[in-house]
Each structure stands twice: as structure tokens, then as C-alpha cells.
Length: 164
Image (tube, rainbow, N blue to C red; front, top):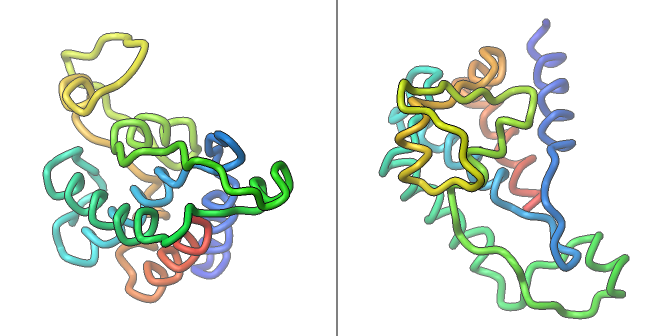
């Protein structure tokens, strides 16, 4: 695929991600996690297409959560909330939790979890369980290549930030 065609393909996949809707709000977790990965690639802390659920990723996720989600003077508002509640303010239902998006991104076509020898089926996932059951996550090679390119990475982050 040509670079722009590849970017457009992944921009569409990222825009169409399945995100929970609770009380009319779309969950921002997957967006924040992908932005954290982009920043860690930029910082040189992720150099291979193996996304570890480590302290660096957790800290970056928390920092970006505070910047993009908890920084609102009023609760975040999106078009779903506007349509369902006519703009009425509702209690924001989401908490800063990296476990859910790390696991649930596996439902997207560009994210694969690499099972460890300790893997076992679970009903829910904590960070400790994810670290035990999965070695790392892998992005599509083409998406990871986009994240390693400064211009493409900036475009990805802008796209994701615009959907938070």
C-alpha cells in the first residue's frame, strides 16, 4: 500500500473502533492507550512492535488520561450524549483503567495479544492478570510503521485526540 493509502486505511479503522457507550458517553480508553503508545514510540521507549503492559505505558496512559479526559472543567460531551440527552449533563461513567483497553483492543483488526505460557480464560482482566496471561500486544506492522514516522504519528495522535 502507498503511504497515504495506508494512513487512510488505518485512520478509518481507528475512527470505526468499537467503543463502549455508557450514559451516552463513548469510552475514551482505547484512544488514550493508542496515544500513549504513539508517545512512547516518539520517546524511544517502544522501538519494536511489542507493546508491553509495563510501568512506562501505565504512567503515560495516566498522564494522557488526566490531560484529555480529566482536564475538562465540565464533563466530556459527545454527539451521542447530545442526541440521547439533549445536551443534559450526566455523570461521567469512566475511570482511568488501562486493563480494559489493553485487552479489548484485541477486538480490533489491528491489535493482537500474544498469550503467555500462563494464559487462562478469565471473566475480567486486571493489570496483574494481563501481565501474567499475555507477553505483549502486537500492532499491524503497517500501523506500527506509521507510528514510527513523525508526520504519520502526529496525524494519528491528532485523529485520536479529536475523538476523545
